[in-house]
Length: 411
Figure 1 (cartoon, rainbow, N blue to C red):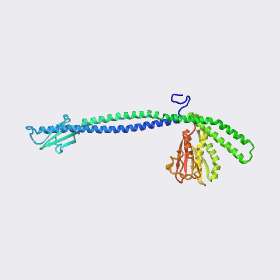
Figure 2: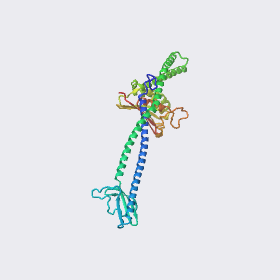
Figure 3: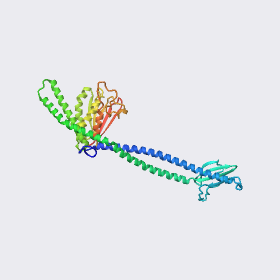
Figure 4: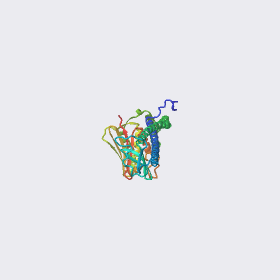
């Protein structure tokens, strides 16, 4: 056994699986970071608001005490010389640039009793006006220091909060990797199971195919028996191809170089020939449209690619009425080969496009005689992803559908 619990010699997760696991870890990290950012932001706003409120309350309390003290002094016997206003400065700041601190130029004459935020000589102050028996006392305190402290607190909070968010994202990444590790092991076990089963089935299926061929060479009692033997040989061949393809697909997941060049011109032509009889019987015109590009070669498993395109044609045949047309269109460029299956059948609502690739999801209102499981497009999508391609589904209700498979061109 290896250190992670996998059997010795197990190739481990494939490249596609590793991408999936990294993506899942990244999603966990991003979600954790966003959640942490929201919490930190809420805490910063709460702390900043409370701090500002407390500082403002403390400044207001100081100015109010100083104004009341000044007013009491003005009312002492022998201290009151005239009715009017006197000023005091709580923090005793010196005068700057010819501006007295605080300026006493009558700016407070119209202020009612209470606290007021004012700007004097381009400097913010909090002023408290106390009034009694015609006497007015004004105490002021500069808010510059409080504003600078608030700015320092905000910068520090943002810096610490940013570090906290990054740390939370890092921890989320680590936690995500540990959380998706069982998923990676499950995917590896699934690949190993497919490879093992495919390998074990190859020999008995080969024997079955050989015996079916030997039986077909024997004189048949009648035409019905001959047709049954021919069908038996064909079914055995199809089963053998499926198992070989499963084994090759599992091998390609671990060794991409195991894929072989596949001429998509030949694939679409073979499919057209295979389905011509079925299309003629259904009264549907099956057309192949190959673009002018000389080369339509991709790397992969021939039978898997053939089954993917064949599944699209089979799906289109079940949705096209008598007299309709299905077009297998092939074109490409230096980097991409595209295969499109276009039909003029019943179509589907555009919002259903994303659902059609889900397993056991079928189009609405299927024919009562059809017993379709809704696996076709889901399996096609798996084949496409295994070949590093993409699948796009487009359609409109009553206006047909188009399914396009795009694969990287073989070097």
